[in-house]
Image 1 (cartoon, rainbow, N blue to C red):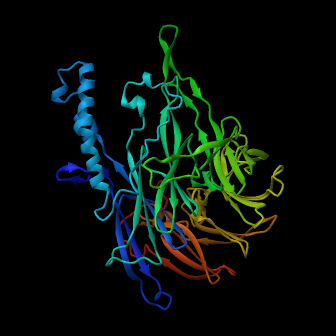
Image 2 (tube, helix red, strand yellow; image 1 turned 90 degrees about the horizontal axis):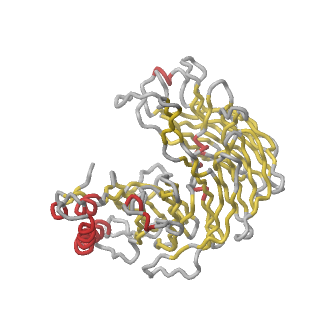
Image 3 (cartoon, helix red, strand yellow; image 1 turned 45 degrees about the vertical axis):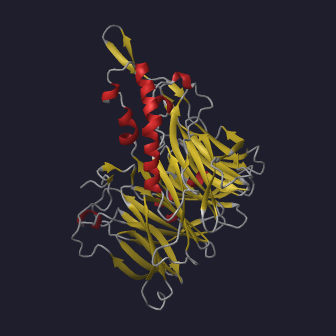
Length: 552
């Protein structure tokens, strides 16, 4: 719904609120219920949450609707501007903006963002986040030229509270909040023990072209047990793949980005007299790079000026022609990067000198990994979850689990791989969501959600559930599978539209899995079923296909 205040639209359009609830679990193990201790409702859509010891940091985002407050009052079609020349209009609009429009806009923002029981000392750092180092601004005459992604499109807020020692004000959680204005409406969220990074992508004009290229804007918050404080910001060219493209280590932020290939707008070219066709010219090559940014030592949390991170190192030229980043993993002074187009270069990178990041080794293999996970204390063995690929055509052949030996950084090896190739397409959500990945270090068991789809309507062919594997230093061996649905039921059953997140948990030797519309428990040692809960039993509130992409 479109939010309004006294008949006028709110600046912040949340399209839903975030509800915090803190429960006491002390009676749960003995069969008791959950006791609600306190709650807090936050304005904005939930983006991410991080727990560091007993402190919770919750990130929400609201979309900003500025048109009615900025664009409309200053539009040239307004009555007071209609008889003016362009020069007169520019002067009059600037005067009106300075005298009333901008002050009223700022007051409205403050009234919508600052709770009555808080002040703004820890909030509202303005992040224009617009690169201007190489831009000839005198050649830009419109707001779209100056700020192609907009100036204020989103407001991100970090709410902090202590889950263990929170002193309740009645039943309301005692929280602190810090916020930042961004030119985007969503962010990737990365957190270490002491810093949270909001990474937002916006676009800027490529010099000499009519195309816009992405930039990643990094806004850093210092984290303490009782609050978060806006600390430092930076801008790097390109976009990040996910939160694993970011890392905080020893006073530095490391970030891996891809700058995309760009082409000019189509232009007609005539052959003869009556056979025109459209031509596009490449204006930017695809490239991958790793930046190292130094966080200032003298950050003043009371200052109105947000400190700038300084680039101290860069590694360019990752990947071959046409390839983009498919996976990144930072491990202390090391980084592993996978790029892909039709084959998979797996790079090992030395980051021990922040000013000189160096490629140590490269492994060229078919397929690719989307997620990388170290499995031993020495960090010499790394599991990769991705897809096997035909190196000639680039066609995916099925879910692939790879085991890499990186004990010699100059000569990384793929020790073994296992491909789920049973006639149809196979995929794991762990490729793009690390929360779906489960590796049990002590028992050396890998648990992955797996989906198989081959359009078959019979008793076999389709699968949705989990695969388990035994992992050694040299092998990946199937253990047992857990099916959450019968193949034929995917077509004949009428499913509720909502689905469970794909997760696995182990309790006292029992593996509990959630996926699709059911929760199952199995013995991890034997693979035998303990119990099953079908959440779609007697469903009367919806009728959807099991997989959204299925065709009846």
